[in-house]
Length: 299
Image (cartoon, rainbow, N blue to C red; front, side, top):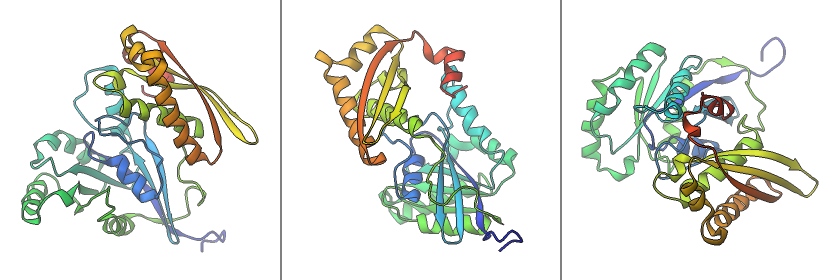
């Protein structure tokens, strides 16, 4: 106990960074034991920083899931990379995550400059290690060992939750002792309104193809809580008329599918009946509109 009578635990902030589509959000959800960060097989699904709070009897680890670090050309993608890099400044530990499809470190060498500048201990996670034979994994770890002085290098499977116990052990060695930073009963600081928008966007990623998911933004216009239900009105913004037609689908079939899938997941997540109303609007070139990107928290 400290002199205020508050129990001291291992507590601190951890940045979770790496290239797109290596399983960062899957890992965060696995560590929390519930879904707070959306997941899809497509790269660059995560756009905003998502904060997850992992609680134990004698620890609290606040993990910041970030957009994938990649070569960014558009203002939207540049804002995402800037957001990921900025998360390194105020954390205690950095997790740099790749997957087994990165057999050589060439693709991440540019990112090690950010790691070096941060001056924090860095743990390398090699995800999807269950898909590789052990004799192929060891040379990969040796190659990364020559690129950066990682504090630890851990093969894991985020989907199978294999190796996550080793990761927790390493994190607890590095985190300082102090008070809990958040109440024990909350898994994230994201609002229900933000999570609703993210889940709608996830369904667009999962149900549509090609450029459509990357041309969509979701804004929750109203979030009305009543005794037995929550009514959510949300707008899906696209950049062109043809994209609007694809999102709506024949006789509204795609929009209905997106809405039903999102509503069922929100009902399970929030534990209450959900009424979800969706609209689709064209906002020409929104992904290069600095004002709109600021509204979305992406600039």
